[in-house]
Length: 145
Image (cartoon, rainbow, N blue to C red; front, side):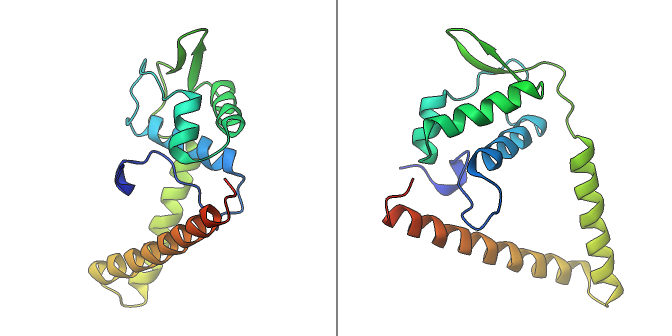
């Protein structure tokens, strides 16, 4: 069985984003951070749908959006491939990083050390992840994939 760390995508049931948008964002992140290299083939629609336990059409919609945005290209009969010349970090990601830096500065201005900020944010992430796993388990127990 695959460990949680090796799963490419996991549905976040607590998110307001539709599943296809969550998948698109995750794949874009993996491409921009170099997990998938230029020219590398992405998982097939069917295999990704099976691994993530989501509908085939959901993966197709996410891949189509990634293709329209220029991150990936479809080669008929072969699959989806990462485009060459993909920028490593886009403007939106830079804005999010700036927001996170601002939050860290605000914690620091309240007297927290970097180590305390790190521990606090790690607890928040752990709590969010736990809630997402619980929601996924509930979704799977109802058989709504």
